[in-house]
Length: 140
Image 1 (cartoon, helix red, strand yellow):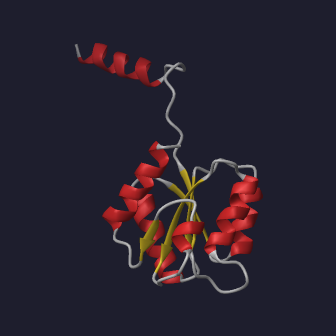
Image 2: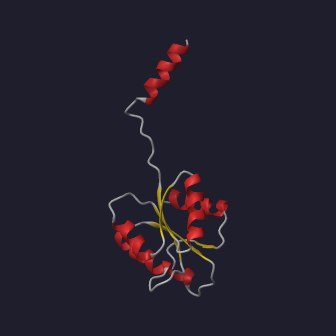
Image 3: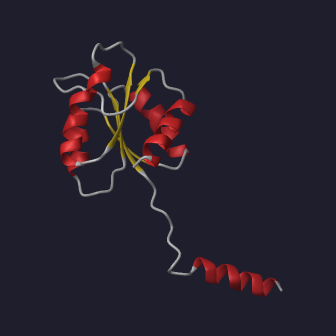
């Protein structure tokens, strides 16, 4: 009997018609290295593939690469001339329909009007981040 069970398990795992779902890929854009590492860990523990970028140039390189990308999680306030709101608009030009979640520790007048998705207030805890990610990806 155990031989039959083993054979059955092997045939199910070798069945080419059974597809393993692709991991969802998230681009995390956060200039604070400690925060980026913490958010990346949270997302990876939940089973997501994460590409972390510390600035808008690295983020654009990822957006222009030929790889699947399901969600952009971006800090609104970043050093340089391009903030997270502008980056998300650039991202949508390259990846139409890309879902976006913003994070910020600041009160930014007008951000809600410009945002293409929800704005999370930092520090963001794991439960809140994962709930928003799941909601955004479910709507994709």
